[in-house]
Image (cartoon, rainbow, N blue to C red; front, side, top):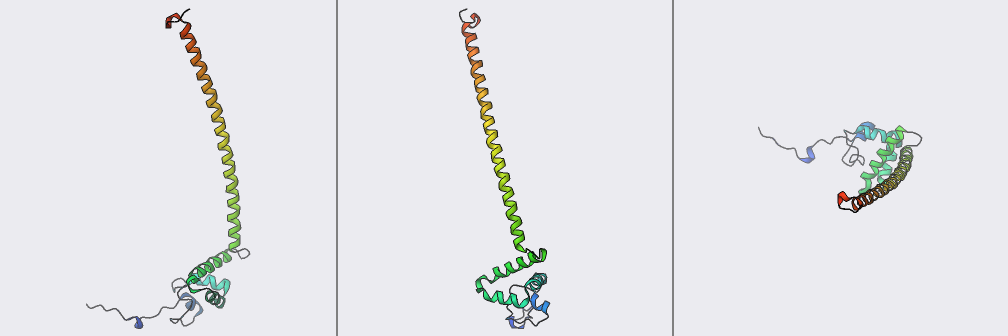
Length: 154
């Protein structure tokens, strides 16, 4: 069986998600096709619902070509956030994360304080232990020095 690959110009161009959703003819020069593949229709649907197709096209065209993919990712992220939280959008997520950071900083400071307190307590206990060891050594030496059983002079 002989398998041949069709030349590039004979391949069928698949419509992008934007053109599919807007029921438009998608040609090879479609400005949205590189960013919204046909199988990712929900990605474009959110962006379209929040910003509108013509605004998305304008925003993408305003950005230099090397940064367009990042711009589209930002639009998709903001659209999803705006759909979840129509009032605050991604700002709500940022505020939530900032609050979590502050709470974690507070917890970290508390834990650092507890560690310092425990270290001081440990140092006090080691001091007491060392003092007791010296006292025991002195008592033992004194006992051995004065007890005839140990060669002392009593």
